[in-house]
Image 1 (cartoon, rainbow, N blue to C red):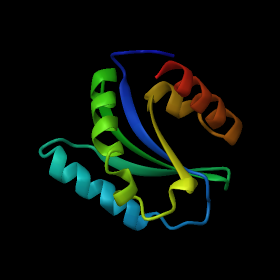
Image 2: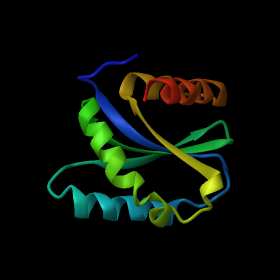
Image 3: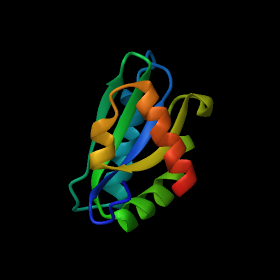
Image 4: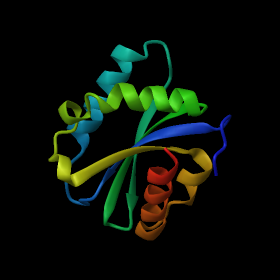
Amino acid sequence: DLEESADYYFVVNVSDPSVNLSSSRFGIGQFNRVNLPGTVIKHQLKSIVNQNQLIFVGPLTGLEAAKNYFNQINYLIKDIMKIPTTKYSTFFINKQNLDKISDVQTLDRYVEFYKRNY
């Protein structure tokens, strides 16, 4: 669904269910406080069937805001994430599609959709 007025989320898709992401999440919180002062943006963790962990950040209002946030944070993500780059990927997603991700197959399908469309 390419809905432009929707709420979007920036997602870090971590392909290892066992890594501790607390320091990475702290780094994302720091990034938000420095770069988006005065905005209420939360970062939350969602586990996908003990295979993947998703850190999702938002809500970001609209596609442009999602792209801007993505471009800002992705430039620094290697410093923020305290795990090897081979263990994660990043993308943005609207709320409707995020809510649909409950298993790895759906997640992989969305990542393919994302690569084709963005």
